[in-house]
Length: 245
Image 1: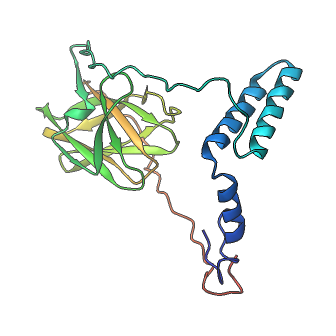
Image 2 (image 1 turned 180 degrees about the horizontal axis):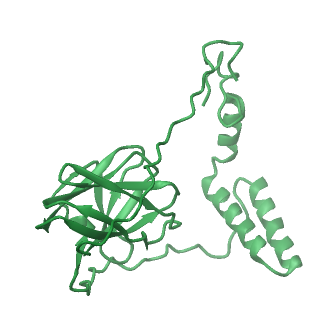
Image 3 (image 1 turned 90 degrees about the vertical axis):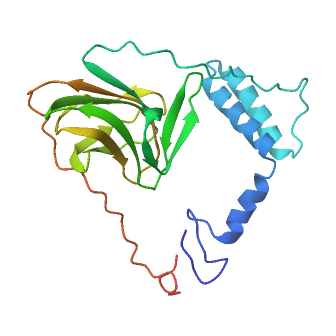
């Protein structure tokens, strides 16, 4: 949002204040707006042209009439199954499987139910947050680390700390909001009893599990320097009428 000389000159996404209010008024019938959009999506999915045009015509009539067309029956609320307990994981002997919600310390995170099965840890967007786990790394060696996660946006990452020593970072690939897992990245971790996973400010991440795989003296994964995000600075002074949008 850019602030200007007044309501008419304040802009948001290319609109001034009056245009924004007009759109809000048009969308005040939220239920009909939702039905209209769903009908349009349905029309786009139809292969028969005449059927698609008929559905679009119905959507147009609904948009013009605040009450919308009368429906024959009411839509019922879909009942989703209650979340089930997460089954025990059958891990390989050399893999230490850590359930994400078993952290011993945390900062700015939420423990919430996962859809259908188990729980997850949600890291808030735009805040640095972290979780810490108790581990038993009795000597320095290489560990492969894999994370089960969900990300709806790209360019996310997590920093790994062994005690207070930063070991590196892992890129969290975009999973389109579904559960996925990272590539296994190998780190040389010193003797420690805690591992901390730090999530810098980004667009929200959910974590389900962490796998640690001991690899002895195997070489660590070669990583590039962690990318640094620098926000674009808007040098326009909104208080100056000649510069305000």
